[in-house]
Image: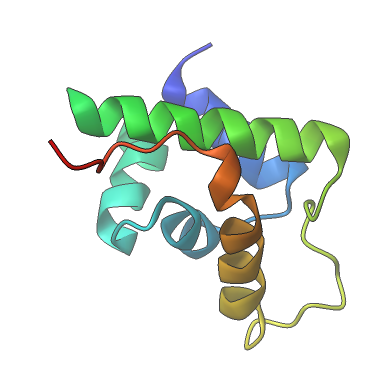
Length: 100
């Protein structure tokens, strides 16, 4: 399954938008839009971090832990909801910015 199709599946099954994914991956909206629309993805170490974050998001969607985003969360509250969810899951992500 391609990265693009995995992102689209997260959007559909997680009731997420490109803006939500941008917050989840802590990347700019245009960057994430390119991932979704054109299938581009980061390379090298950034790709490893991206894949780890994508795998965690897919796992949360499968387990229904915080995603899909509840219908009650309006578009004003979505950024805070996504950031809170990411912050809660941060310990489950591998660290890529460790001191050398």
